[in-house]
Length: 105
Length: 120
Image (cartoon, rainbow over all chains, first blue to last red; front, side):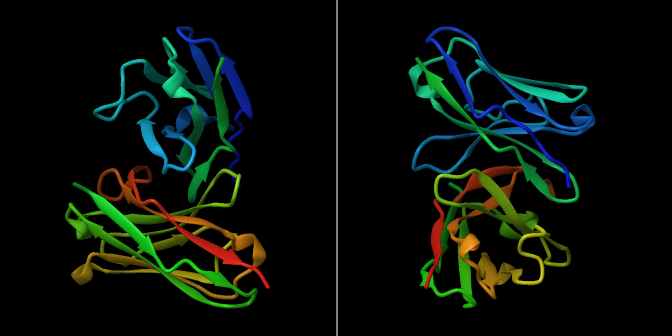
């Protein structure tokens, strides 16, 4: 079965740029979606189809996907961005990465 | 406004059965594939199952195949998950989720979840 690998944690200072990676075999050939989940809340879609943003999601959130790695980039990080982030693809079923906890220092 | 409201989560013994429901509103329910996604306490997201707009196609995660059955009643704008032969590892918050468009495999709206606890 297809496996998506995310770092368990990423830390970043306010105002800096956070990059969260999602590794998978030839993931660049798939559409990757990213969700943000804050404690006690349901996930929220922040990037879809590698790099598109749903309405209402700040331009600070962006995505890229090539080769074996997809990346969610959060520019000018704010305290409110602290959350768990999950990547997701379709491969004979929906597959989620293990999640990355973003800590804003 | 899109709303998804799950219900049916309870404490059940291993080997038991349970039926979860999800009441949908605020969108044309029978235009969309619907999903169940679960999250064990303190763990990540795990996709469980999907059903096409008309119920004609269903998919399951290997971990629940043969034990869980997804269904829908478009006349009632409702999604269901019949869970049989429950195991302790099925303990989780179960979310109902709507596909972003048609038969897509990404989610734009989620419910708040219903908690299933499998324990003796």
